[in-house]
Length: 395
Image (cartoon, rainbow, N blue to C red; front, top):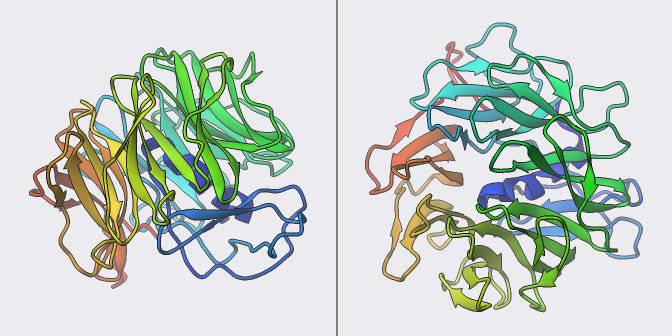
């Protein structure tokens, strides 16, 4: 079973965990989304649109014609495994078209399917000790999207939330005791937190705006998130308990996808304040803003190196979508991937900072790759076969 259109729309909110985003084109024009739902639309040039159906704005569209190419690869914190989700993997028994979560060793070996219920399962989030995975699933009688957790081998699945609407995980606390998650259970999308066993749910935001992309600072003291309406999204900070909310950007155009550096002080984010999606860094103590990229085409999907000295990002400056790397203190912005027909996305640093996993569409196929940070050692970890062979395929 494929993901519901509303769940597919949540890719924009969930991908920002690592400064990531999915870009898709060809959405159908329909005005039949349920009232009160927030709908996300992806632009092939980068960024996304947000529309609230029934508000008198331009007609809403659905995502029914768009499915994930493949899932953002997510490294386990111990660096030994990569989790992802996909709607078809050919080299496993009992294969079907359902969206499920998979895991493989960091070298692409030992691929295994972790979920196998009839409902879609997606958006895996590793626990800090690499022993558990939180994820989104519609495997309940009501068909609502809820937060679940399982052991890293797929066993011991537990449902953590139960509400009408959509709940989806953002990230774990550093000690693994709490989970940050998003929910529209009270109308708007807000930021929530709960114990890792699903108890003690706390609502951290609750204004009349939609709040997304929540990410906790590495020291656990603050949470960054984006809030607002389409065309006027800003980056906010709040204390870990939800107090002292501050708008950090106050831009007339969208500022989105905040990502913390290891020092818990700097935030990288995407801003359209100059009319084109570009990468900025903010010193959250001094409120000092630095523009990192300045090109005619969008730069997106920014993610910090573990040491906080480099940024990996996806750029369309070369009229495709490829992986770049830059030092945050200036210097060259180095292109790491060089296939002009490629369409790269979802960069994710290995915990030791030596490799970047990413998803790429090459030779008419989309697979998960890793590359060394000097641009060498490109390795395809999955293999989308078009000749009918029994190899792994992610579609």
